[in-house]
Image 1 (cartoon, rainbow, N blue to C red):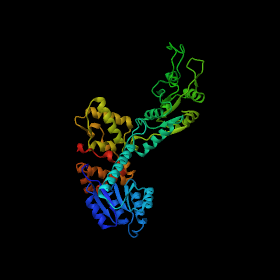
Image 2 (tube, rainbow, N blue to C red):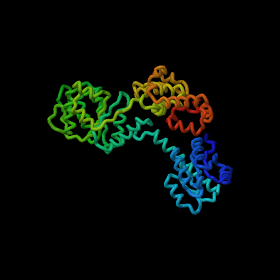
Image 3 (cartoon, one colour):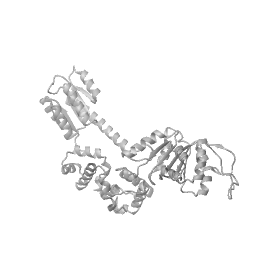
Image 4 (cartoon, rainbow, N blue to C red):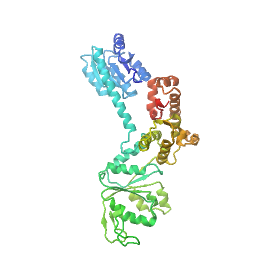
Amino acid sequence: MSDEKSKVLVVDDDPGILKQLKWSLIDFDVVTANSRESALTQMRLHAPAVVTLDLGLPPDPANATEGLETLCGILALFPHTKVIVLTGNDDRTNALKAIDLGATDFFQKPVMPEMLTHFIHRALKIHRLEDENRRLNLLTPSVNNIIGSSEAMQRVIKMVDRIAKNNIATLLLGESGTGKEVLAKAIHTKSARSDKPFVAINCASIPENLLESELFGYEKGAFTGANKQTIGKIECANEGTLFLDEIGDMPLALQAKMLRFLQERKIERVGGRTEIAVDIRVICATHRNLNQMISQEQFREDLYYRINEICINIPALRERDSDVILLAKTLLVQFNKELKTRIKGFTPKALHALTSYEWPGNIRELQNKIKSAVIMSDNNYIDAIDLGIDEGTSDDEIELLRDIRLQAESKAIIRAYEICGCNMSKTAEQLGVTRPTLYSLIDKYQIAELLPDRSAS
């Protein structure tokens, strides 16, 4: 694809200029149009990155009205297109008006092909840089270690960015394995407390009789075995962030003490009598339904409102569209480095298995599957069998709940691309569309990461 010439649309009502530019712009694949209607038709057919546009078009070639309407029509269809307006020497006003409407540049007649070629190359470079930037913004996490281009995760990322700047008690809700601690660390890292401690404690992993002393610390002699004064997790997090994971598993008796600490920002160590002021940010997380626990008197309602000044609902992996592929490829790079292996990627069957599986264990399960596959695979590419995923577990009823057209067209494109040996031109031909249309569909459905690597075929 790198050897192919970039498509450029030349719009002008002068047949002589069209012919001249068709043959003189040898660096490009030039298509032409002589009216607004034909220009928009060529845009839909070829989707060129750059257009040169004469403002004097029929039915009123003496004025710029039709040309400016054509400019607006092009940018309405393809807003990232770079339009170079061709103007007469005395038409600078309309050239500036075109710039205000979204044109990239203007070029004064008479047309000099060598100079216009330079303008087009510059516009193409800008288009490529902007396109790459959009892709990076889509695929690169905006906060550390959060990977996701899906709409659901983009919402989460925006919330993290905003919440981090404010010292607000945050509750993270989500299934086990969805990355609640990763989000908590991201909030801490983006906050003004980033150079202070981040202290995490899992309320479900510590026995009830030890959790209080872990959190609040204890004085020497407070209980059997307390041979010295010990600072608790809350004090350790002073000036930083305390992350209480699985707070839904905190015992009711301890919830009352935690509520008092959150209200007063003071603690007493177990066996102590002195109040100690602590300045920390508190982030809590749970996979439990706290509202239901409140109604069953298993969780204090006043504590719930204290820890839930703002809430982030973290989507399950099965709700994150093609994020599973982004995560899988990131984990593959990570485990290749960790395990000193050289697995290159995933076969089409593996990619299909990854996107079809329901992932009840979410990202934690995906990590385990990828790590196991890297260890067990004897080939350069991980196959579905290496992942240990039964493709039959994909339930057709789940897919029927989704956007049928999106799913059908996405699968058709991926399948055709595999059958055509990862050749984009052949794929477009077999699907009965132009290459630009195919690229447009790939961008629209965000399936570029689902297409198997050319070398994997």
